[in-house]
Figure 1: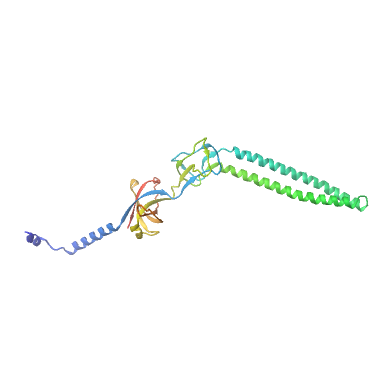
Figure 2 (figure 1 turned 30 degrees about the horizontal axis):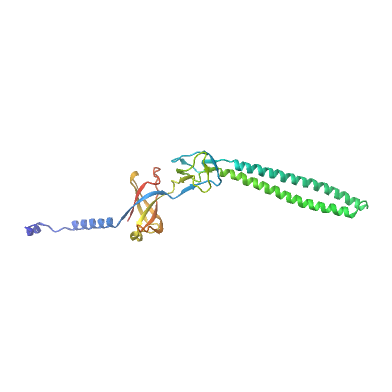
Length: 277
């Protein structure tokens, strides 16, 4: 029975052999490719905080809002800086008053010195009086220089205090989406504590982990296929980073893939796959 079946089988022709070779080759290539699961991330996520401590007076944004660069996010109470401003302005007034006083005294002493020099030429005053007036003139000239520097210093302090006001109006450093808001009106804003997290959607990447055994199959700049199934997006990406720190539990390395997409519906956190040929 078996012999009859063998006799009925016809030898493969040339076309059939080539077809089988192509199928085997394609299966081999598919078997050699690696598919990784990943997540869309923003490579420019900023933790926004305040420089000064103070009560929050206004919050202009909510989670999910898209903001442009320079847009106001929240404001902080300015009472402490207002008090510093008053003190600095008072210091400027005092320094200017001292400067004016020394200038007036210098003018009077200089006139008196010139008069005494004329009187000395006529032997109507002593040389000692002229010398004292000359010394007083020099001292007042030095005091004018010091007072003028004090005025400049006070004005510099005023400019510094005015500059602090811009840190009370917290603005977006770049365009993006508010992904977290940890501050409310009436709460105390603390320096170093993240109040808002801003995610830049113009610089998205895909983060994935690759097994240690497959790490040798990629390098920086390697081209891969990027898929975002939920949006039916398929494009070519490049390996932009290989993080040289393995997970001791899974022995995997984190990699980042840069890609371009004109679809504005791509957000951080979306599921993605990476195919490494």
